Structure formats: structure tokens, C-alpha cells
Image (cartoon, rainbow, N blue to C red; front, side, top):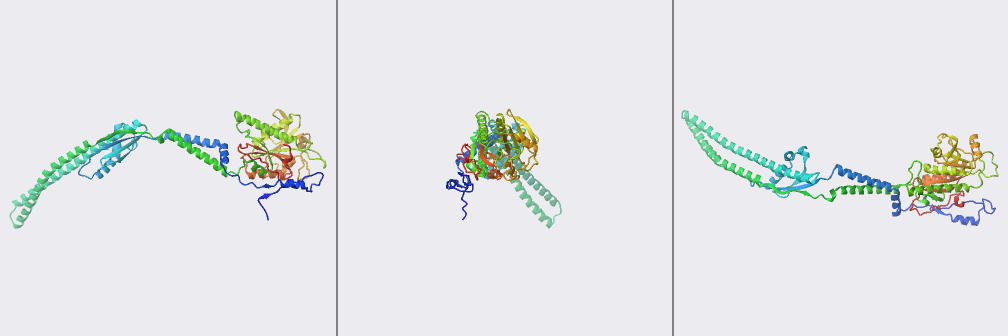
Amino acid sequence: MNDPDHRVTFSIRENDGASADTWTDNELGADEEHLTADRAVTFTNLAFIGAALRRSAWLWCATALFGVLIGYGLYTRYPPPYQATTSILLTNDPGQDPSVQIQANTALAQSQAVAGRAARQLGLQQSGSSLIAYTVTSTSDQVLVFTVSASSSNDAVRRASGLTTAFLQFRASYLKNQEQIEETALIQGVNQATQQVASINRQVSQVSAQQTSPAQQAKLSSLRAQLTAANVSLGQAQQKVPAEIALARTTLTTMTKGSEVLSAPTPIPHSLKKGKAFYIAVTFLIGLVIGIAIVIVRALVSDRLRNRDDIAEAIGAPIKLSLGPLAGRTKLPGLGRRAGRQVLDMTRLIRHLNGLVTHLNGRVRPLSGAVPQDSRRPQGLAIVAVDNAEVVAPAVVSLAASNASYGKQVVVADLSDGGRVARRLGVRKPGIHAVRGDGADFVVIVPERDEIALLGPIPGSQAEPMDVSSDLAAACDSADLLLTFATLDPAVGGDYLSTWATDAAAVVTVGKSSSVRIRAVGEMIRLAGTRLVSVVLIGTDKSDETLGSVYARDDQSASALPF
């Protein structure tokens, strides 16, 4: 029955002369302690979220600052208006429904005619529809409340006063026109009654002048009856119309003079929600929340590794050195204490790589020519950059210069994508170049980009010794140290790495590479037959308390190294 929860790694060692294929009780007992379990996904907690926020502080600070700029821009472009309020007491026509009259007055107050009159009186250049922003509400059948908005408190008060004056004047003019229309209609009624009496009188005179006959007598009687009725109507109209006109004029005077400003225009206090500070504070919080949300979501969905144990598990080797952030050639260096820490961490990285060079198994031998089968293979160190070649390249140059300054013949093979080391030394073309870097002279080898295999001078672990070009052999023949700077691509593979180096050190930047990418680099190094003797982390999280002490996956482990 398969148990996917645990896996065991065994190593075959020579022990006190015993055969390499022979297991001893001591070895088996030691290997039993190397049981490793697949690590579960890291729990999301406050420490995890806090670390993510600290790493990406620049992002949520930038979104918060962007929110401040938006808030200031909105306040400048669309400032909240100042408001003033005033009310008018209206006298209604007692002969009409008050609710109907207040609705008519409200509509009249919001009309373009009132706004246009107010604009002219205030001397505004805008059109009537855009000169004043105001609302009209009714609190009773006789009271209208005007709320006017403007860019300043004084302007709001001034416009409110002008608006109420314009409304009262327009309403008075409107009522006067209505009264004149009604008066004209009454006078026309009297005139029509007078004309009707005159018309009937003419008909009576005409019939009376003709010869008398029974038909004419009947018609004359009818006309005289109509004349009597018309005279009665005319008399009533002549008596009623003056009274109605007088009443209408009295009502007009009462409605006009009885309508007045109930409360003078008063500015409405500017609330905190309409202040510049409120705008900026709200947009600042919105930008901050958006930035924090982006950081947290990105941290939760990211497959990039940051934990020492997770990286060690993925690459299959323990972490030997953890450093802070390092600035590459394309990045601005730190300032103050940060710059000092970067210099110190770069020094630690170079010393660590020098330690790997010092502890290579056996003295570095000439790298070309026939190699006796009973002798050890020539030694070389490969420094594998995992998605961070621009950061690791300066350390490789310093490492080569440091060894060359002690009189060693150093050869650096730049197998990285883009030739990061060669470019730092001013080399732009493939070939073998004598260079000077950091005050020391050494040799840089840049293979042709169309060379898929990128084979080096050391016989590969998985192939028979092979001939190399005479130029490469000559360059490496007298070398005391062969350093290889490489970036591995799964599409090409890494089998050629063992022809350049027997040992390798991988440099990983925390949070830059996915678990699949890191695991692929570790597997390519092991499949090439090169020992992965060290893993260095750059930009280690301060909150990471793990050790990264996962055991290596085969006998080519760095666990036996004294550093």
C-alpha cells in the first residue's frame, strides 16, 4: 500500500573499507533520521500578512498617495458648494384651492423666467439655466423655502437674496397679467351684451316699419321679449362687472403686498464632509485599502517561494547562507544604513563562495589534456543564478578578481542568459577574452549563442571524455580555478554543466521564483552529475524563522561540508 505522506532518501557511502554497495547498521540508522515529509502549504496568519505588507510597503503607500492626489484633484475640480437658505411667505387667493396655488407657485419659482430675471439683476453672464443651482420646497400652503448653492458663502447669500426678489417681482407681474386678462374678459362680456341689445332694437324697428300681419305681429312680440331679456342681462352685467373688477384689483393688491420674505438669506454651515480634509482623508483611505487588498491577494495567490524550508524542499538542498536584498547593476543602490547592509551582505556572499572554492575536493588540476583514469576529475565551481543573474553577476566578478589578486590563474565561463558577467567587464562578443575587473586580470569565456550543448573542458559525468577546441583547451590548460556563471533553462537542459564544474552553488532570490522553477533548477544540476554543495538566499524575510535544513536528495550533498 503506497503511503504518499512520507518519503525516505538513502545515500550509499564508503564506510571503513566496506563496499560502496554494502549497507551497515550505522548507515541505515542514520538514514532513518533523514525521513522527510511533504510540507503542507504554509498557513496564512497575521505574521504572513504582515510580512507581505512590509515587503510591498511601496505599493500600498503609492496607492494611498495616489488617493490623496485624486481627492485633492476632485476637491479642486468639483468643490462642494456653499449653501444659503431663505423662505418666502405667500398670500393666496381666497377664492382658490391653497394646495393648487402652492404647487403653481413652486413651479413658478423654479421656472427659467425667474432664473433669467435673477441673472440679469445679479449681473451674471451665464444663462438662466446654469446661473444658479437652487431648489425650492414648500413647508406649508403659504411658505416656500429656497436653498441656493454657490462657490462661496457670501455668493450663496447674495444669489439667494436676488432669487427671492426676482421671484416676488415675477409673481407680482404674473398676477397682474392674470388680473388684466380677467378684467378684459369682464368688459368684453358687457360690450357683447350691449351689442346684443342694439342688434335686437334694430330688428324691432325694422319689423315695426313693415305692414302689419299676423306673422309679423308674432315676430315682433318675440323680438320684444328677447330685447327685454337682453336689457336685463346688460343691466346685471353693468352692475356686476365693476364690483368684480374692484374685487380682483383688491385681491391682486393683497396677494402682491402680502407676500414677502419670511426669513432673510442665511448661510448654511459647511459640514466636515464637505471640507478639503474630508475629501483627502476619504480618498487616502480608499487608496490605502485598495493597495493593501492588492498586496494581500497577490501574496495569497502567488506561487513564488519565500520560506527557507519551502525553498530548500523545492531545490533539494539545505540553505547555507541567507542575505538581505542586494542591488544589481540595473537597480539604484541603497542609501545610508541600507547601503551599508548591502555592502556587508555582498562581502558575505563573496566570502561564502571563496569558502566553496577552498573546500573543493582536491587541488585544481589542469583542465585539458589526457586525464588518467585513476586520478580525480579536474575541479570547478559553477554559480547558478535562479532568475537573478543581474544581482549575482557582481559577486562572480568580485570572486574571480579576489582569487586572481592572489596570483591564481582564473578563468570565468559566462554561460548566463545575456552574458551578465561579460557585459559588466565590457565584453560584448563571444570568444575568449583577457579582461581586468576589480583591479585584477583574468580570462572570460563567452560561448557562441548558437552552441546548444555549451560543452566545457571537463569530461562530463554522463559521457566519455571528449575533445574541446584548441583555444578553449589553451585557455583552461594553466588555470588554477575555473568559475562558471550559469542560468539554467529547462528547454535546453543542464547536462553540459558537469563539463564546466564538479560542484555548484545556487543563488535564489526570495519571492522571485516559483516552486516549479526552483525545483527544476535543482533537478537539472543533479541530472548533470554536478554536486549542489550550497544554496544561498537573497532578500530573506526578517519574519522567516525556518532553517531551510532539508536533507539533500542524493549523496551529492553539502551536508558533509564544514560550512
